[in-house]
Length: 465
Image (cartoon, rainbow, N blue to C red; front, side, top):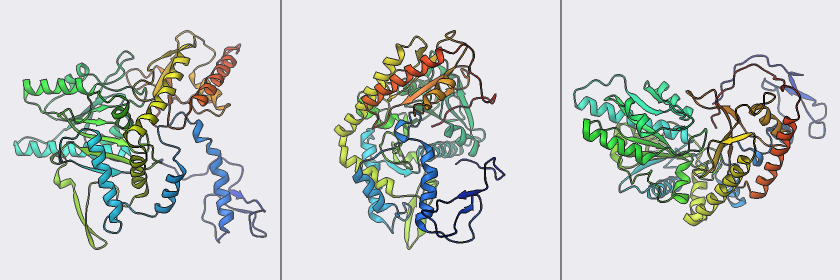
């Protein structure tokens, strides 16, 4: 949620003008930030919102976001037929609830869960991560109480390149975040870097399958082996949560032999974003636990709602059910082979783009798109004093492309990178057109005879899509 401070914004007018073609006679303007006194025609309201939404740009050319921007017409039809379903009303919409359970079982099977599991849909991976973290904290508290030990000062271990949701979790639920420093050589969590941070108050370790900054897989199996060894030596039993927001729907299809999921006993829970490489419209995440016992019963609520008993794990209450149905549609529509072909096509485009960008004398790759279809690059030190990657990002917008420029996480925040996320629908043809526009943009900036002027001296912030 974006926080908006109520105040007076700088604008030409405090009113919105109305096109007379769509309005009632005499209806020329409405207040911009105040509820209008009367009604207006539905066509007029539609046109006002439609016209403003056009300014958001072309989603197909948005190479910044991980979130899906396209589904098939049949999915769009299904969406329009089911957007009124409330996921929380499980007795009101029992078949939607059943389909949610099917999706959980499909994901548990995809991630090699050994037996009886539990899971839930969520608004997105952020809520799913919160649930994974809460299960860690409560399980740790219950174990410590049973041992007669203090439950104060729990901590959670993760790399400094973790997505901001984990910072939020630690803040909201009073857990000490222990950020393991990263370097350009090792821009993610490693077994060696993680172990010194573990102690008896560690509730778990978060390992990322697809780091937001670079697309890199962190080595789940190596970290799990290090924690196995730690338990053998010290008795400390520290579980792993895999943040598979992106990689959870890539690795099973493109790297099926990679050990990262429930085949590792140390992995207690996994989340993914249905609305990322699950290929669903925004508003859907999933979390699954390896065993039901890893989700403490006291975190499951049984609510009498609309005449029925409703067990719920989620933090949110009323939320859309349509995206769950769209996820099941994709599972039926694509199957394993369909998902493999779609994800492989995205990765082929990512590798092509990375290979072409590596040919520019201005740039050096940090990653190459061979984990998830995401990669990042930096401007070579000493290449130019006249422009930087922020200037290049702005120049690409002249051609319609949205490509973010942002600093790397703490410990290497002095390094700025650009990143491309390749999603379903970004074709090899579009990729070749992008490379042409990138070359034009670099050529334009290279012709500068002095430094590019800066609009603001405000510090850059991390990119958290």
